[in-house]
Length: 149
Image (cartoon, rainbow, N blue to C red):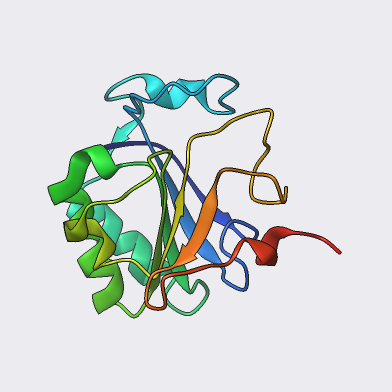
């Protein structure tokens, strides 16, 4: 599995400091996508278990969540990374353009953002969005966390 970038982010998972990995090879190709560079398969660097584990150790006292922007198309590899994240006491999140996530993945997630990007409906900050930010344990949609009053 290849990742195009790694960043520490603060807004994608409300209340969490997240280690964000943008995974390359997305096949959805949503119109108006803000990251079309992620469509290219094997773009970026190989995300190996030793590299991933070293990043988790480096940020152990600073970050609280591991976020994957995509990667569900690499189910087995993603499950291994999610398991390692949880073992290291991180919460986990997946942002996907799909409407549903496999049981194999969902059981290892704290949150999941589902739904294809639709420019006319906007993202999670828009009340009319088709996207859903879901807390997995309670199966509750928590889009309200992104909407400014």
